[in-house]
Image 1: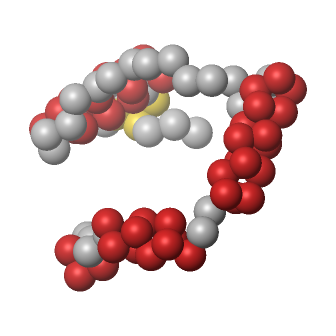
Image 2 (image 1 turned 180 degrees about the horizontal axis):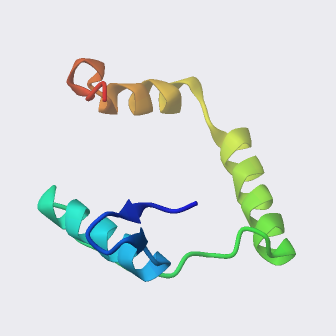
Length: 80
């Protein structure tokens, strides 16, 4: 089942668990954001994503790859 709160003597509701999670994330320095994303299940979106991906893959040169690699400082990437 869900997380149990001994002070309440019952399991937490979904809303209570969500509130605890939000407070814990805030305490870690995170801020909640809500935003809209494209529906990746939409056939029109998938077709357009495929089309753009194919165009990008077909036009990528070795110079492009070298440039992208130069943008990343692998020694500075966090490991966790």
